[in-house]
Image (cartoon, rainbow, N blue to C red):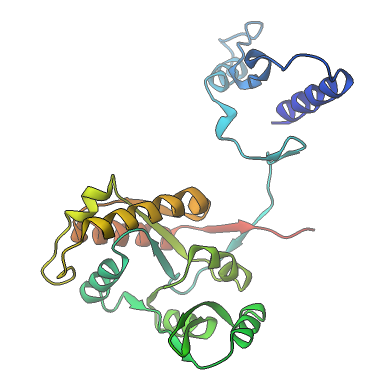
Length: 263
């Protein structure tokens, strides 16, 4: 990673020195991981490691920009003594959450929304003061997700099913709440439209509604995939809920590491 950083840095300097030079070729941009180290002995352990690295692409290695390499990041361990909240994103959310609560009432609970008759300014002040996580404007009032209501559920040894927009995830992190974020990925709008359930999907999903949900889900995945803890495959509600419960169990038992602050 250090070599990659200096390679990019020297490429940038060379470009600055000769602004009229041609654009660097694709071959010049290739990562050092893709180069063949023929001068290394493949029989040695180091040689084998280098040959293995040759097959790895750095396209998926995150860089903030050309001047900052994320080769290393300081992290800290978080002990989750209580069940982590769960945020499910994707189509048919209400039906999925209803089934989870019905099938596992002692494991999943919906986060209660507090009805508040206040001004927009007062609600936004509550968000700024880290008292509220998210809110929805209703006729004459606001439905507010508060930090207190989330903690009230988790203290009952239950996973709190959140009803917040994905942009509010950062607000949760700021108050040291780290949700399990699960995205439901459907193949297309037709697959959403085909879903039926006599209890949790009594109303038929229309073609217009399925298309809107699919397009919204695509936008969420494009903009917020970095927050996803897991992705489950769309299909029958029972299959989705089984996948979600498995993912939640796995994530709850994992060691949680978060980016550490500056020294």
